[in-house]
Amino acid sequence: MPGDARHDLVVVGAGIVGLAVAREALLRRPGASVVVVDKEDRVAAHQTGHNSGVVHGGIYYEPGSLKARLCVEGARLMYDYCEEHGIPHERCGKLVVAVADDELGRLDALELRGRANGVPGLRRVGADEIREVEPNATGLAALHAPNTGIVDYGAVARAIAAEVERLGGEVRLGVEVGGIVAEPGGDGARVDVTGVGTGGPSVLAARRVVVCAGLWADRLARGAGAPADPRIVPFRGAYLALRRTAEPVVRGMVYPVPDPDLPFLGVHVTKHVDGGVTLGPTAMLVPARDAYRLRTLRGRDAWETATWPGTWRVARRFWRTGATELRMAASRRAFVEAAARYVPSLTLDDLDGTTHAGVRAQAVARDGSLVDDFVISTTGGVVSHLRNAPSPAATSSFALARELADRVGL
Image (cartoon, rainbow, N blue to C red; front, side, top):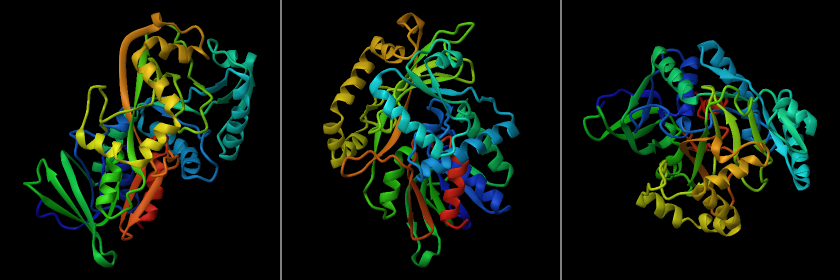
């Protein structure tokens, strides 16, 4: 590695978006020198491999935003890719259910957004039709999004990584990036790396660099000269699994009407491509960016979260929500009760005792606002940083890759 020639593109991060960027570059420029680096020993080690596996339809996002535009396009591209490569998936549909009168106005607003965003097949259903779509669900009204689906994003990422290598690119794992420096005059960039196979500290020279570092995106961006705002603040999302039954409790997915002030969608009931069903996720602030276990604490992560002014402003604004999340983290009964509001047959006896968790890389602005759109910044015209890429980034990955490739002129 120390003697590497200049590459056309270095991608930092082997999650689904980073891999999709590398694939996009190689499709646009066959024979280009493209390298993906990641500090972990496998692809899809973090957000890609720990999410709910939902192919989102595009209902929730502000019309005209990057999320609104790229989610609908990305879902179409995701389904095309899965069909082409034989990756198991299912368009099982989703219900967003209003169970109280004060939720009906928010459901109206979601419907308007979904229609503005061109969500395929979106329709409003009444109480009787809810049970036709999901026999175990109940509510006053709902939105049905039949194009929403499920997939294993880890499997998709592994397929993309294999394709990148077939196209002549490289995926180098166990390689950590220490810093990125754009050369003067837009003449490429240097990526400082260490790790497996590097023979010690080394430098990758690149014509263009795209950084898709997820939970660590802000650190690399700041190190490359980008503004400190926004900061990544980690939120842990826990899922509880249900016992396997001959007939799953849901045919697809059932969601609550979300709080419009929060980018989190609430505890929902989701079927997965392996036939399992989970409840979740929660959204609890944690002291580590890889806090898949509640006991995980990392001093630097905790310090950066605690010293960011936006964190305290979020805490003051949403302390009641935080208290609810703590209650669900401490009580499975409370967790099940949240989902039973719209799937009332659920009880503690339905749980199989297993859990899993992911960590959402949520960008928080200095003023305490939770950044709701994808955030992309460019340094020196040659380094592009994806600074906020929570859900629906996996759904949007192929469309997001095109956007990132366009922005750095690939």
